[in-house]
Length: 339
Figure 1 (cartoon, rainbow, N blue to C red):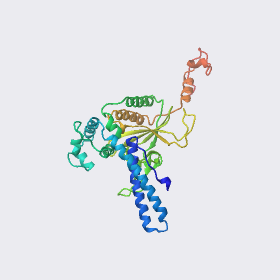
Figure 2: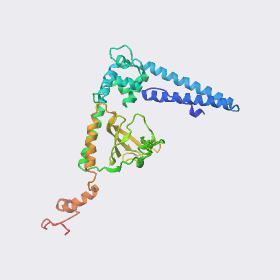
Figure 3: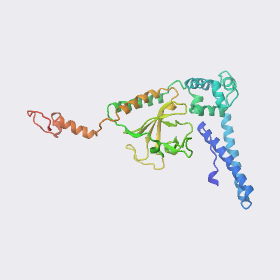
């Protein structure tokens, strides 16, 4: 029973989410033990002891949550106000629509989110807003979404290089198909409940870990490519708002070319980037260009670099005399050796 009793410390909003879920789980476990206590007299001492321990952990978790909320309640609302305005316009929503989604009274958000207001939206409300718009809470409160960061420029340069190498056929992407059941356990997890028409349902859950705020739908074929940093997978996806975007993963299930060790305990997939995380919507265009190039070169005839070199040396013997591979005198007329 001790293994089940956990308390999550909170240093970020991600920890806050884990702590909230843990608080709910502990509450359910206590209720379950109390029900068992009423039904099983023989286990009374053991169950009572378990309930006491659970309640202590529940109070400890509640203390962590309360302290975190107290620290966060004086956040600078100028970022939230600007970002909320941007997100509403991007999704074609009014602030009254958001208030309805949040289940708060009309005018509550519009009054409270104003930078001049002395009040602040509660941490729970801010958390719900982040879940609705699929954005990171820390970003929502501490950065301007409209302004690209240096790290975003680096990712854009990375996608430009991938497109260039794709256009130049330096790298070649392999079509992995678009049937989700072919990728269960890698990118998708099959859900227990079926659709209304009896169809299978899946959730985008790389390495088996579903995330409620992730992109959820596969819109086209998955492509993979071998690069100097390992095998990459490009997924075209659609989120709950019907927005299309991409996620790029690196496969880490085997030893990489530039790695001298193999971490068998690590995840099989590493998320490199997701266009859904780019609030400025700059990365999406670069990914579109890359994906079009990938599709364009999908049917290219592909040979290895060593084969290219051999063919070049065979077709151009004079140019390769120096290495002695084809030592043909200059006076002999060149002629293709096949008819």
